[in-house]
Image (cartoon, rainbow, N blue to C red; front, side, top):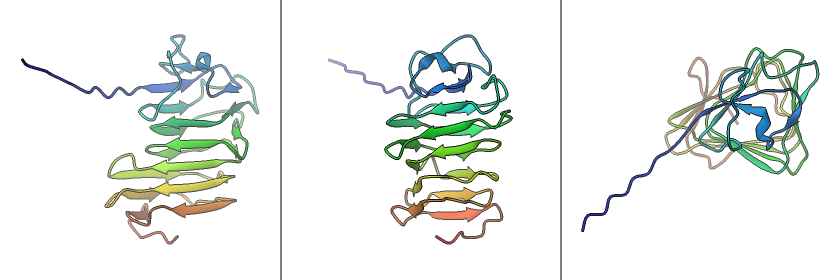
Amino acid sequence: MLIVSTTVLWSADYYWIGGSGNWTDISHWATTSGGKTQQVTVPSFLDRVIFDENSFTAPGQSVTIVGEVFCAGMEWAGVVGIPSLSGTSSTVLNVYGDLLIADMQWSLEGKTILWEGGPTSRINSGSVSLHGELEVNLGTGNTLIQQSNLNVLTGFGLVPETGTAEDTESNPVPF
């Protein structure tokens, strides 16, 4: 008897559309920027989420996270109207890869956890101050590259204390 088993890891890009809404409302997740074809589930730890010039329809709109959510990376690029990412102190955002944000307001009062997304992960917060806690979990030998000044208003930790963090010049970043 021959038994064959395979594991398929699926990943996709998820584009936010339609302005303000709740992260778990799948009508806000499209397969392309500004696209009409919606994703069929909310993002998982395998899926990259993207907020861009086609994500918001008016100034000051917000993406609200309730509970715990996951993504393989988060990118805010080219957004207009200074949208926000919000959530209460019980909210947990798990990012398994890069966290690249700009031109938005970080109103997430809960915890953001960066997990190793490979040998190198990047964080670029631009001029955005991060509310809530930021926890970085690097695997042994993995590197976090900090591409901008990082302003975390509540708390910051590197857990466990393995791996390294560097700035864009490959200089160690103190914690």
